[in-house]
Image 1 (spheres, rainbow, N blue to C red):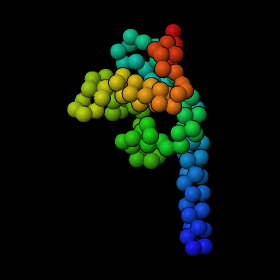
Image 2 (cartoon, helix red, strand yellow):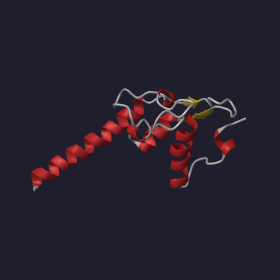
Image 3 (cartoon, one colour):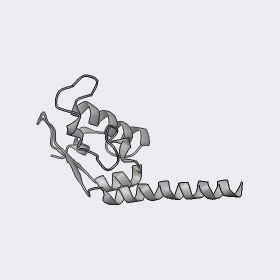
Image 4 (cartoon, one colour):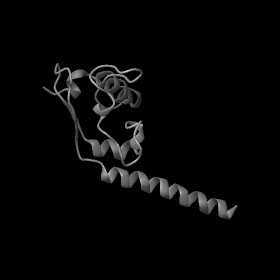
Amino acid sequence: MKKFATLLAIVMVAVFSAGVIVAADAPEKATIKDVQKSKAPVTFNHKAHAAQIGKCAECHHSDAAGKEQKCFACHKAEKAGNTPDLKTAMHDKCKGCHQKGGKGPTKCDDCHKK
């Protein structure tokens, strides 16, 4: 039992450390441009989001660790097959997370600064 507890502690430290390392490598800020050009671009603190969420795959869900792409690489201006367009993806993922967590902006002008 003692060996199991030690192994579990090592695994937990490794998982936590990996999240901290990934957050440390995250860019400070990220900007998502409105491809329809009807709203201002959205700029957010990417490093803070990475640190709080802890898993890049939560947002970069189709990319291998360390090979994360910008959202637009998959979510084009137009819907392609089962992949939602950029606007739908961002509103579902970002706004949805803010609503679910009860914090963060959820209104248009809160993200799309004029």
